[in-house]
Image 1 (cartoon, rainbow, N blue to C red):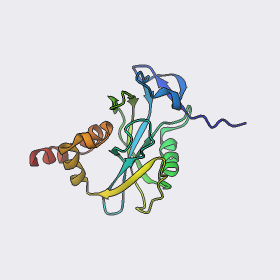
Image 2: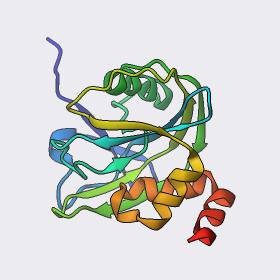
Image 3: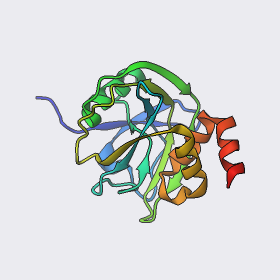
Image 4: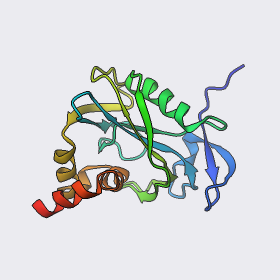
Length: 183
């Protein structure tokens, strides 16, 4: 019998796996450090996909964020987890998967007090712009110009997930500096 329980990989401060936990119970006011990933998708025109998290999400519901993110299962390769999650969340098959920020790590607390505490490698990929997002994951989505998104993130960081406000400038450091100078 297969379990439908989703598990996350718990990590020591140095990033070494130290165990697993049920995903449904790990995101609390005292979330332990665990492994995750983020992915930023681009279409053939160079636009970036931003999504608004579904209102029923446990952390940062209704907030605009990167294309998608998730957690690899214990023993699952990060690249396989990214491809799985693209299909599960967006109904998409991705191409040109690239590890862009291998050492990204953050800790953030949402308005309800729920903590995200992740070592979260960041990937980029390309995808066909015709998507079929799952409503329990994605409330809305938009294809936007990277410079436009950077300007919005710099001007109104509170409207975006904390990981996006950190990842996007790291991915586009020079463009982010230009966006901040325009404000």
